[in-house]
Amino acid sequence: MKFLKMMLAIACFSALPHAYAADADAIATVNGKPIKKTWVEFILRDAEARTGQKANDGMKAAVVNELVGSELAYQEAQKAGIDKQPDFLASEELARRKLLVNAFLADFIRKNPVTEAEKKEGYEQYKKELGDKEYNARHILVKTDAEAKAIIADLKKGTDFAKVAKEKSLDPNSKEKGGDLGWFAPAAAGLPKPFADAITSLKKGETTTEPVQSQFGWHVIKLIDVRALQVPPYEKIKEGIERTIQQRKLEKYMLSLKDKAKIEVIGAGAAADKKTP
Image 1 (spheres, rainbow, N blue to C red):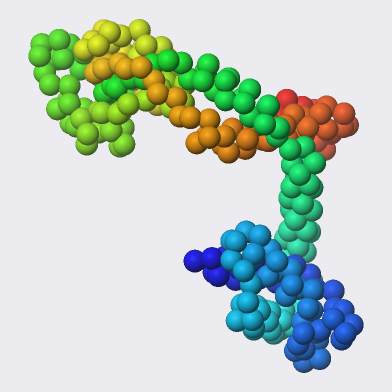
Image 2: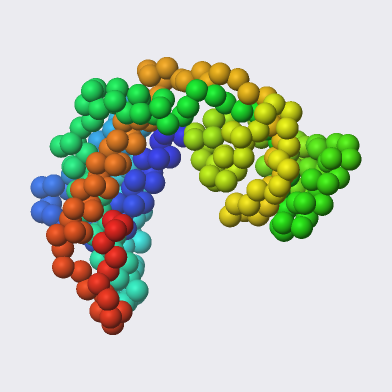
């Protein structure tokens, strides 16, 4: 529910250290301590931006009520000395850093928008990487090469592939479907390269004659069918392409910052790896 998301924003806001303002900025007081109007306005504005739901008097009253409750808890926490505890101080510092970093990243994205030309170029690259075919296949996943070879031998004798998959496959997503993976484009599905290579080398109806190894184990694969790939239209996926390009821009910028920085991991005896942000 959209309103619940706003309440979560209040909870996060309440976790930050309070800096009390003059009474002129108060919309309420709790034991003489003000609840800021600017807090309420910020929470409502943030909720509107995230949910699209226009703030009203009822929401404003609910926010004030929640902030009053959080203020009561805040005051009791101070009385108990929780705000002086080492774990709290570390958590407080990390929370402030995270807020600042998130604001910086959002500002970077605003200042470096993805152009329509970049999105169109990204779409063409996406089509190129996707290829022009999609495949329907089944597979059986087992732990060892020997198990996979034994299954291949049984299949050559006429054993039903789907039956063996249900009995022996370790893949929880396809096991009960007889190893059926449905229709997919290898590049889009993010398949391990050995698996994708095996799929594209098979002819319709063929099964791999040797086990195929991936990080998950050993596969026996059967190609059921092949058809021309219908690439989603640009308008349908342009938002996803935009997010991908934004992420790449941000990663490139963070790498440039790391390359220019002098980074030393104290006690590790080596500089931090500069290959990843």
